[in-house]
Image 1: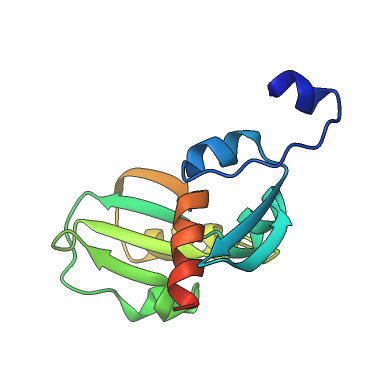
Image 2: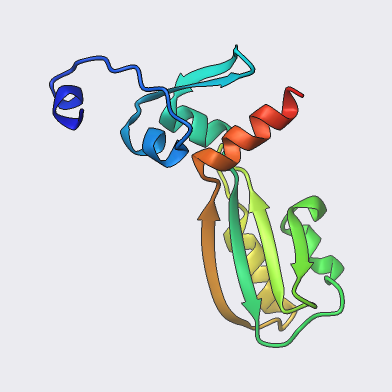
Length: 136
């Protein structure tokens, strides 16, 4: 199938294995109960509906978020988890500015030290589940 795809042959793949579709497809159609919910290029779909998160492991747990942090980012975008040891910032991949540099500056001003950080993005399966749940 990979060779056919490389030669420009259109392949219609129906699968319940979303990882397979994510690996092979250029365009994705989401079908729920026989109804097409969405058809989109994979990269556009991931950018439009995917969510990105910055997860910060803090050196010292926080009991609450300092108000000063909300000068940098929207209050709904920040959550404190794991008994105050983890700060999660959800940001929009469509925006020109992620807000990450501003958030890091504000954390520094608040003397909040970071032990570790990483980013993650929604998988195609996460997007599929949210689309199907939305339509029910």
